[in-house]
Length: 296
Image (tube, rainbow, N blue to C red; front, side, top):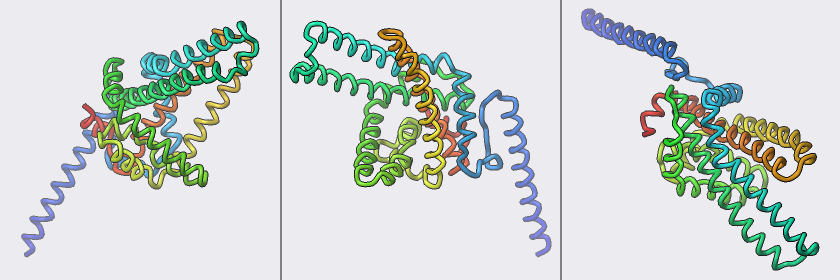
């Protein structure tokens, strides 16, 4: 009996020693691997931290500023600028021909119809932006170099389900907000990482929404704080730019407004992707390298 106990004790000692060696190797590999994240259980964060999300968010943007600005300009800034300039030119032309044109119901209806179509296009492009930046963000956090073509390809491939998730989230949270504001906010927070889940884990529309609720459970107040900060920063930037837009008219004001929208859209999209990674690490201790294994 004593020999049997000694045998089992020897086996456990060997297993523990092997695990210690593997942890040391993984940590040393991570130290020499640039910004690649190879966090294991011993580095698993205890809770969702807003500060860590912001640090990772701006670190990712800083390493890929050209790519991220290019994607944001393509999918957000330029469409907003074109729509703004077209609207202003149409209104100016209408008023030049007939100063009372804005009171003409038929004229307003024709222009409002185009505006609705334009807004829908801008919404679709916003989803393309978020999908492409999710791809780029996780590729970067895995120590890889995201490419423009790859991000565009992923965004187009998942366009329809991404739009489906976005519409369902907006509809569900909107209806809940009509009844009571707080339930609507809670629903929206629960589904806030549904698009990164869809792009990353490929669970389909409803599966991604359900998975998002599971990941955000217990961290929704922190997520709420994160998005409130982002909202306040966005409002502050837009307010600061209002003076410039007021002083300058036409294309200068349009360019300034589109640049602001480009930066805000970029930061919000990247923050959402980083939040998804943070939630998986908090909930499951999943390293970014493990996330990338299913992202091909």
